[in-house]
Length: 341
Ligand code: SAH
Ligand code: SF4
Image 1 (tube, rainbow, N blue to C red):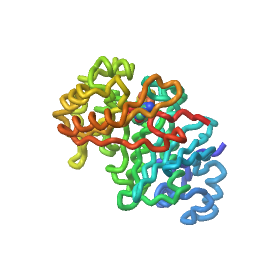
Image 2 (image 1 turned 90 degrees about the vertical axis):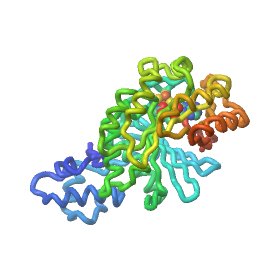
Image 3 (image 1 turned 60 degrees about the horizontal axis):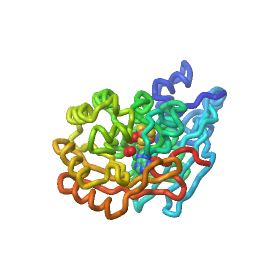
Image 4 (image 1 turned 45 degrees about the vertical axis):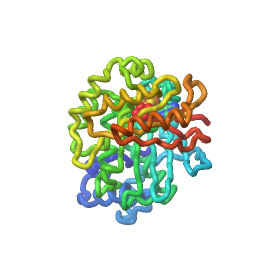
């Protein structure tokens, strides 16, 4: 079977090209795959034809196949991507005016088990490789002719999986996405969202090249948080907030806290006031998401009035935005990614 080139860094591409090649060949290949977004190895005209043929005997660029595409009435597109081993993951394109956001997966399924999330019902199937993470961006970008200059394109790792439980691959993929000779995005344009794996937050902070960080807070008390997200029994709210306080933000950067509002569970005015108190000494903003309901999800979506009241209270203390649900009709919204046909 041919080896995928996507996901390889420069040194790995040099090795794939074999001995005796001048080192600029690997650079040409790297740029063709990530910057030029070549879809076929044989079409990389920067490389001599003979070299292309040789490489193609054992390698292919290796983008996944878009097995299915679902198009929402709001323009959102959900892609079911088939990986080399036949497994599938999902990625979602959300166009909005001049801006496009691609939501990608970091794992097939998720081990974490949050009670409001449909991906949790899959369990963890496996980690994605760096190549499989980068390939989601390349494929969706190619299929839709997306432009990335001027900050038009944003990537969020908020699809299937917990990115900080697959950190080496997530970091390698991020380095390729942020490398000016690679996909060439600004670090302001790539965000990773975590349920709050505390030790990995510190690890991420030590990386010179890293995405922005969003944290799923989702509750205003330790007790409710542990009920909703059982994994947080291991990573307490106070430890999480300490890790956030210690996190080395870049001068332009703020932490984001995601908060899924569940009717009658974490959506009261008192919850909103507690959120402000919890986050008061952090340089951050809050993104509210009203629950995207789904089969087997034992919660309800709060009323728009409740959501507005919650937002108004948080806003008095912190920047606070409401995320519009996207692609609800095609099961593409947050927490709905579960390979439904
Ligand atoms: N595992 C990571 C990233 C993927 S989930 C994390 O949990 O942060 C991305 C976001 O979707 C998280 O903020 C999560 O809390 C939210 N989410 C999960 N299920 C949801 C649902 N049913 N409705 C709305 N948001 C949901
Ligand atoms: Fe996994 Fe995130 Fe869903 Fe929790 S919310 S089960 S961490 S994908």
